[in-house]
Image (tube, rainbow, N blue to C red; front, side, top):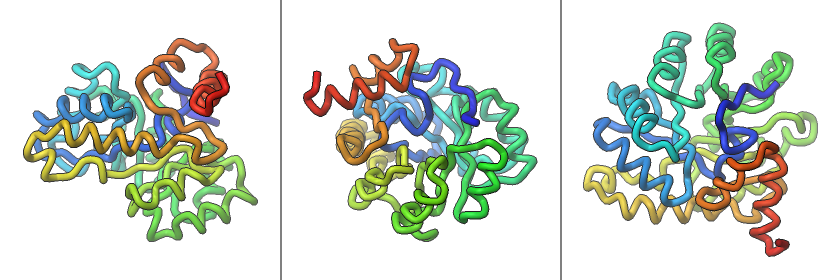
Length: 252
């Protein structure tokens, strides 16, 4: 099972961009300019984590004022938070782990979701329940690329968004794996840049992160701009993703 993707410009959250920015905001007023900078740099999927009281207002502001962004909620750990986030406008949900109650709430929310896993047993349990797309967290501490590579053989149907300990230096290693659709990270959102309102710096860092998805592996890692707009126009998102990759490789 893949959770529903209403109005999404790709077949999956994992295919929206090679990198999903993981955002922690103390002031919801920073949400809109930050989201605009990330989108301009090529990262349309934005995960706003529920680590601060400002998160729900930040999600709502991005959903209302930055239509080019696909804003989601991260660090979702209770069924009550599922409802709160979707009411605020979250278009996907990410959890660091899962329980039956949380999984049931996410299934019923009507938006895509990535439940968190860090062990083979957790992956198998989700596959039994029809869930094929997951967050791998904490990625580096849980075994990193070696662990994910070892899962690809026996569990090829599982796809992951690794998050935790990932930066510009090691993201390409993850993106090259056949079972990784994208990675999550915060390195393109330096705390000092947000505090200073240096949105131009964040846009440049986002552009560098978006470029990591070019020809790193067999799976579709789609950027933004003309490529994402092309995917929006295609009813068959999978075909559109392949067309984008071929164009990048100079094949028309």
